Amino acid sequence: MKKLVILGGAGVVGEALFHGLKSSYNILNLDRAIGQADASHQYVDATKYQELLEKIPEDTDVIINLLRMETSQAIEEVDTFDQMTDVFFKATYYTMHVANTKKIPKVIFASSNHVTDYMEENGLSKLGREITTEDYPYAKGLYGVLKLASEQAGFIFSLNTELSVINIRIGSVPKEEELKAVEGNERLKRTLLSKVDLINLFTAAIESDRGFGTYYGVSDNPDKPWDLTNAIKELGYRPKQNTSELKSSGL
View 1 (cartoon, helix red, strand yellow):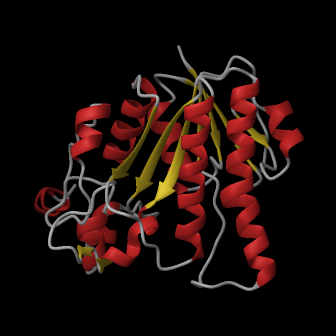
View 2 (view 1 turned 60 degrees about the vertical axis):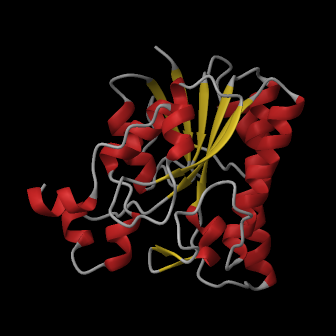
């Protein structure tokens, strides 16, 4: 059974992945927000390289990087910029450096649809077609810029080392129950990545033999803004849900 480390695993996406994958993989959740530590949940400050080096086990097969912090402005004050750089760029670099040092084969980086959010408005592509990973990325704010920088750091690691790096530009994963969240939220009707498809996509990324790739993570919703062609072709991702079926079934 493969061993996974989830960094930033105490959030909505991390908990969904932990519960959805734990029957198939051995998982260690690492996060600053861990309250009661146990065998599968432990504290780490990923902005500190030495802590990552000490806490990530040598026999890990895949690191999933979900590190996050709350942000609200396109252009932040300098103190917030420094914090965001620590979390969204430096810690990503540290994670890949630790993986390479320990000969861990793969890192999956949770990027964001905000890397290209200038091309999207209220969940609709402004290009007249779905946005692809081949489109030059324009972000509306610092968050998207730093996520893009981390994607590029992954490319240089994959190019110059044996490390495999998969970037997933995650759509919208709501905290609340999905049907309730979708009702009255026009953007979410198009951008939802259901928890079922979240598990499917990350499982495909874990099992993939790709050395590097960047993919959008979204369910197969009507009028979704992002293209899934390369995720389907290269990773074998098979979305099983969409918001129209979610609403009609009442699931």
